[in-house]
Image 1 (tube, rainbow, N blue to C red):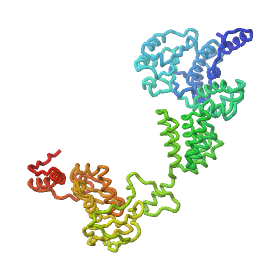
Image 2 (tube, rainbow, N blue to C red; image 1 turned 120 degrees about the vertical axis):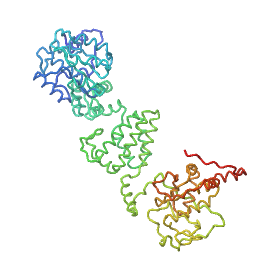
Image 3 (cartoon, rainbow, N blue to C red; image 1 turned 135 degrees about the vertical axis):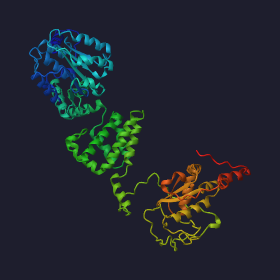
Image 4 (tube, rainbow, N blue to C red; image 1 turned 180 degrees about the vertical axis):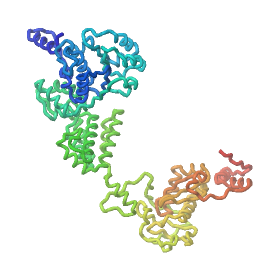
Length: 617
């Protein structure tokens, strides 16, 4: 049977004689398909194992080839079939000239059956295969079944194949190829010899592409071939398909610009400029670079993926990787990548990677891809120097002031905003404001410096009178508030809370005043143990809680956060509960004196006729 090369030569002769019939064109991936184990690129371990099995007569009856797309699984299956059915075989070096080798290479041999598992996945096709297994080969030594994408078979089809797969006739060999071995039953996997095909190294792909370009009589820049190899991602077939497009796209020479124009990607210089603006926190110039890239024909999604890969290499260079681990840029740019990483810092680089990754995820589900990319770049420009945060946190824990020139620590979500200004209390309780407190609190004099651990946003609140009952045996009625807040103790909290309730008055004060105990768990926190769940729900309304916190902050001279809990559910905080009433009459009297009941009596001008105790839930 004539080979494919003979057919091409005859086609050339017919064209030279003036035949008008169209010439059959074979794509690069098929023309340069490996024909022997020696030509197999990037799978030397598989080629060596199969060659040794043939040499030592240890050929199994079923093989499973797994790996990503375009790494040589089907080509290896055909080479193995030629090795077994060659006229000089079984041999690890088929001749490539006999009828069996030529027909297997073209895919039309009668004894080597290539089956598509996706279109022949039902049990009926497997039953027909089982019925044909016992028929001996027509002219070759073995009847070989090559099933591609075997994981697409149904469970019933796999079960029907199990017995034949385990004990086939001596003249039958099975070769399965799949990209998803996890979808295959373990009963099938255990009956096969499995070979995992690794992604083809980039250097091997470049060497093969250089050979193909020379055979085609076209010149190509080394940078263009390297860009194609990196774009293929370990798939030899993908790289050859891209080269096929370039051979039609460009002329007699393939350049790096041709590759970028065909793929819709940006050049490395453009990526370097964008990342440089991001490091300098220049959002405007970064967006201008994006706009210029889009006007040059760069796809927005491709640009985002390139930026993600570029930042990945920046992080790899920053943590100490070698230049050969650069996946998206050339090794010559390793020094520039490391310098960019040192200017930015590892933590900031990782944060930028996360922002871009989230943007890419959203871009795949949105039509406004450019807007999402620009938002991500602006967010990256607004990132603070995250590498300085550990030092600031350590200084805060040590209660030491931050170093000179250090950026301010970021505000947390639960931090109280600074008080806009003092809210005047009742006229009869006003008192003159002073800048110092002469009377001690809790037995300790108050200094003019702020108390560590209890900072206030901005300057201390002035102009707010403090009055009420004495605290720790020291009268503070009419005492002015100093420029520095006093210690936040239980006694100070009790007095400040009572004054807050007096200033607010009304229903809010009645509900918030129906508490069992107060607890100070932090220098800027007050826990109020309310008696009922309704009181807690009412006080946690945004408008009520905001007014309570602002009023209490003015009274305390610092920003205070209030947490409301139900006294019955706060056993772990050990609140000081009041003793419950002993008799039913006393319980009814307390229920009648509830603030809500009193407010209802006032609003509706009503009187209490009957009080029913609430049933336990």
